[in-house]
Image (cartoon, rainbow, N blue to C red; front, top):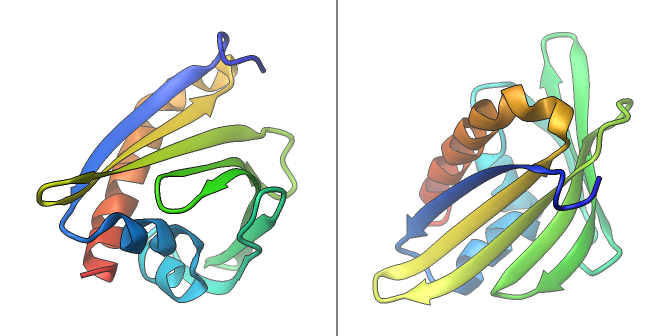
Length: 143
């Protein structure tokens, strides 16, 4: 998928925390457990190898199934930029997520861009809504 073909789900969120705390919430297992996919199931395993080329795995128990969200870090520039691939293990669809973190007077502004393949266009709004819910939970986790 080239960037020109991608469907873009974009979310912006402001945090009262400093940029370093916001960045670290994305790559620290204990913090991820507090904000990832709230209400959908218990995170039973979180593994993070925080570096360019490193990988992550967030295994969430949903009923009787364990859903493993996996990816590889494409950019890892603390505290201002993070980019990674995004996939559910066992599926063939891989997308990309780009996060820009900027200091503002009241704390931090985060902009998240999730590039989806064109055949996922119907999920653009749902994807943005899911990230919004997680960013709200993240704000609570880093207060």
